[in-house]
Length: 198
Image (cartoon, rainbow, N blue to C red; front, side, top):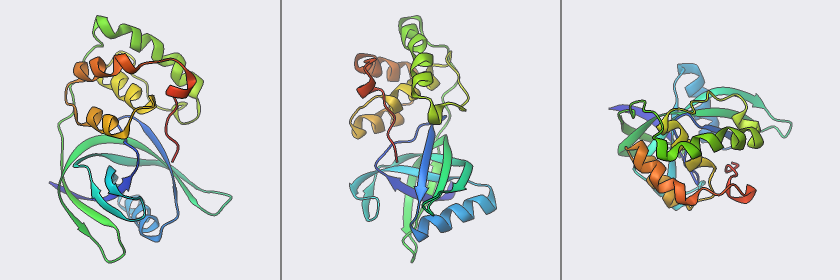
């Protein structure tokens, strides 16, 4: 069990996935400062009820976000580039006086590396062109087109799916089952393969 600050959002972060953020609330500015000082990550969790400024309830499984870059924007806001690492299960949540949520969490076991099964090779073949077309945040990420988990997580994040479906994809511990669920949704049209912008 470890203790990490939690960042409730209306999006799902997956292992290996990029997530740029613009930070302006004092509680999250302090959180980013703490994480940079301690060289540690924070937990991104999907909001179940409430809003990003006033969260009532979060889903129980999230992903640790590692800060890989940051900059001060021309608008004065802090821009932070993060990348998803390990998934976790929340045990308990406390709220500090400044409004920051602190979670006692258990890191979930990483899915073992496995080759994309033959029946899903078309997805792995399609993905490089999609990520190249999306550019931006995907330009510098480490790519593992032969790994079933990595390919599934990338399609889960770029497909325009209901957030509850995206959360279900995060909670799945079987990469082949995830690919099976995703394949019917794969549509190469631009409006369905666009990552969420925070």
